[in-house]
Image (cartoon, rainbow over all chains, first blue to last red; front, top):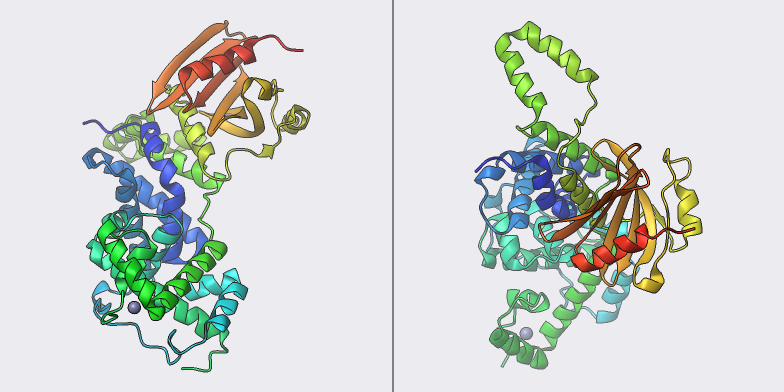
Amino acid sequence: MVQPSAEEFERIALPHSRAALTLARALVRNDADAEDVVQEAFLRAYKYFRGFSGENARAWLLSIVRNEGYALLRKRGQAEPVDTLDEEREPAPSPWSSEARPETPESALLRAIDGETVRQALGTLPAEFREVLVLRELEQYSYKEIAEVTQVPIGTVMSRLSRGRKLLHTRLTANADGGGRG
Amino acid sequence: MNESHLGEALHAYLDNELSAERALEAHSHLGSCPSCRRELAQMRRLRDVLHRSLGPSEPSVAFFRTLQQSLRQADPGRWRRRLARAAWSAGPLAAAVLLVLFALQPARPPSNDLTGEVLAAHLRSLQPGHLTDVMSSDRHTVKPWFQGKLPFSPPVLDFSGQGFTLEGGRLDYVGSQEVAALVYRSGQHAINALVWPAPGERDVAPRAETRAGFHALHWVSDGMAWWLVSDIGEADLQRLASLLRTPHQ
Ligand SMILES: [Zn+2]
C-alpha cells in the first residue's frame, strides 16, 4: 500500500484532534507542550500510516499520542514507571472515609469547588490515573477503547478508574477541608 | 446480604460497562447497601465536578495550520521532498542552494486535490468551536463581517424557509486560497459553502463527488468558485446549490 496523501490522513486524524489534545494535556499538564505532543504524534502516525490496518483509528492515534506524552514526561523526569503502581494496593484510607462522614458537607464542598482546584488536584494523580479519567469523563471512551489506547487489560482500566476517582475525590474533599492532615 | 461491596464494579456500573446480568446484581446490591449507595452518589458528584470544571481541549486554528503544514511537508508525494532528496545526493552545496530556494517558496505548495482540501476544511470546521467566526442567521450581520477581512464580498443569503438556515460565517483556507465559508444547517447537519473569486473562469455546472461518506458539490458561476460540502444527502446538497444559483437581489 502506498502512503496516503497528507489530505487523506487529515480526514481520518483531524476529527480526533480534540480527544488527542485532551489526553496530551492531562499527561503533560501544560497547554503548549500538549499541542507539541499531538503535532509530533500525528506526524509520526502519518509516517507509519501505511502499516496501520486496524479499524479503530481513534484508539490507534491516541495510543501514539500517549507514547509521545510519556516520552516527554520521561524527559522531564516526571514519568511514574507503571510498575511502581501496585494494581492490587488500595488507595491510602482516609481517616474520614465516606462511611464516617455525613453526606451534606462533602456534597456542598464539591459543589463550591472551582475549576482551578480540580485541575490541580487531577494533576497530582499518577499519569496512569489521569489518562483513564480524562478519556472516560471528558471524551466518553468505552473501557475497551481506553484499554486499546493505554495497552492494558480492561480489568486494569476499571481498577485504575476506580482508584483514580476515589483518590481524586479524597484529595478534593480533603483539600477543601483545610488540609489539616499530612 | 452485603458480604462484599461492589468495589470496582461500582465504577463499571456508573459507566454503564456492566453486562445486563451484572448490572442487575449491582442494582439489587445498591438497593440494600447504604454504603455503596453513598459511594455511588459521591462518584456521581465527582463526575459532575469534572464535567463542570474540565472542558475538553479545543485545538486552536493555529494548531491546525501548523499540523497541516508539517503533514504536507512529510508527504512523500510532494515535489519538495523529492527535490530535497536529489539535492542531498548531489552534494551539500546544491542542498544549501535549494534550501535557500525552498525558504523563498510559499510554505504550502498548492494541492491538486481540491476536493480533499475542501473536505479537510469541512472536517476542521466540525471541531467544536470552529464552525463559525461570526454566528448569526441575519445576512445583514454576516455579510458586513467579511468586509475588510477578504478582498472580495461573498454573496450571503439565508434559506431558512427552504430548510437551510444560515448559521454564520468564517474565514478559511482551501489550498493557499483564502476563502469565505458560509455555514448552513439542515436538521442535525452542518453544511459548509466555501466561495472565492475565480476571475476569468468559465461557468461550470455543479459536479458532485462523494468521499468518506461526505458529499461535495462544486460549480463556478459569475466568476466565483463554489463548494458545498456536508454529510447530508446529495439531493439536498443539489437543492441548496440551485437556491444559491438562483439570481438574487
Ligand atoms: Zn455495598
